[in-house]
Length: 84
Image (cartoon, rainbow, N blue to C red; front, top):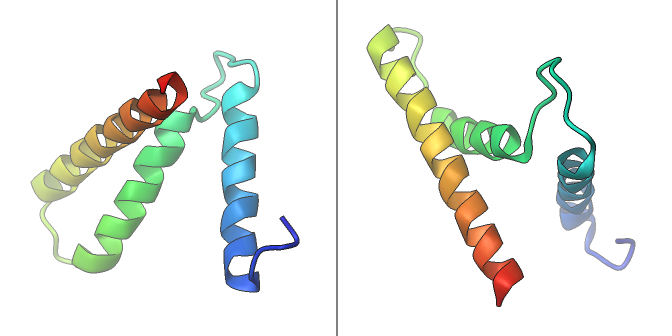
């Protein structure tokens, strides 16, 4: 990881942590899954573009649903890469 440019080292470290979290045994205590982390990343990016203090709750609910749909799509693409 040290051979990466500084601006990518933080991202690589984060991705390494996500992978480790995904491989850890899951528990009933709501430990975030890789799906949760992907959805959170998708939501953060979306909210950075669309956030508004007056956003109606229905819009927030739709964005949360969209974030998990995006997370599911990211997992599906990730699985395709493993199979090839």
